[in-house]
Image (tube, rainbow, N blue to C red; front, side, top):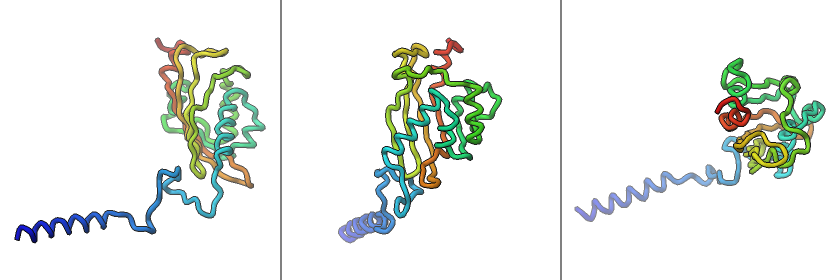
Length: 194
């Protein structure tokens, strides 16, 4: 009877393990960089160079805003989100979670009112540390180092951005962007808090 119970328990464990395995038609390697809801078959996907170009272009908007470049690489229905920016610069005039810019035109308008604080040609002020992408999404980490020609303050400021893209008329455009960064370090460097 003891042997029968042991065999039964072993058989039950083996069967439950087999039931827990994914079926062959349901398997995916999520470590390949795919979005869980995206299927790479029969569709265009961002290349490494295209993802890098869009991240660099977005970074450039904070050096020198050129409305022609914004119109060329940003979708008209672009949305920009940043609770860090809302907390630091808008003093509660917008609710957290709401878009900083709800369109490409609003993005341009906001950046002309609040022009870039970094002079053109300042080396190493906005460094892209790493870029990750899927078919339509780009994530990048960045840092504003405290050394170099332009110095925003003694603390480095680090941030993360997630960008959604869309391909229209054969060209990748920025569709939406989320950015969060160390607001405390930024505020301290600007002298807003000690």
